[in-house]
Image 1: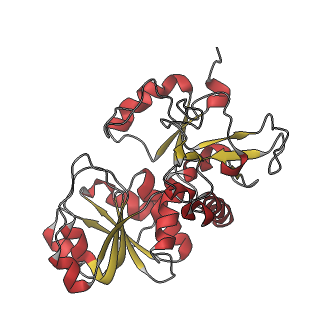
Image 2: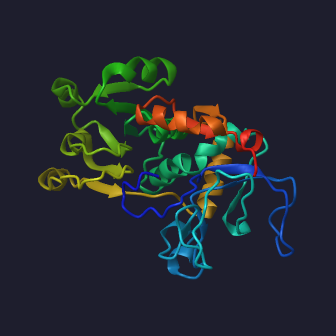
Length: 304
């Protein structure tokens, strides 16, 4: 929205964790019918022919089209889910579990699949493993909840001690490390099988690498506005990995939603009205949200 990455096309209508009820279907639609509960995530199209698409990894297709701020096949700009009506290709629509609330579950379509997909791909979903989560925010609290559903031990790593009591008492994390405390970091050195780093601000990653066991994996999700420094020697001596990951493909997103419904993996949300959006943005800038705002478009947007 703020063009921090330099490629925003204005005017922009965001929204890529979209849930609702089908009101109309095209004549060739087979997957859905009117009245079905559905979701749309971060993408609405891909080439459907390349190796990535054939492997159900449409999110890594070079021609994938994001739900908003993308160029559609007809040359128009895609607009996201902050709307009373949305049209999408049935291939990119997710069937919503009957047991999952639409409002609470919505953030799973980005925050949920991003953490789930990375943990599965990098083997950080095995019971008994010890994983670290950097940042207890929108993505971080989803990583923790999936890790617990997988049967893993979880340590939250934060720059501030302010979230410690909440992390341990409310979320039940196994341990909490303040990254600015050298003694705490030193005591935890070499204890983690993997780390999910959700922080989008520029931050040092060498201290995080030190927490990994040999063969450990540090997976980055955040997109800082400046490059991070990558120390090589700590990677060599432990055969450690620094990697990245995006969302998942359609098949995996459906798998994630079904898993979340079965294991009651849900985000913490605050449901707001459309006329509260500007206030929500102010609060978001201050970090004053636990841990996702969800806009009730259906009940509060006044269609022109």
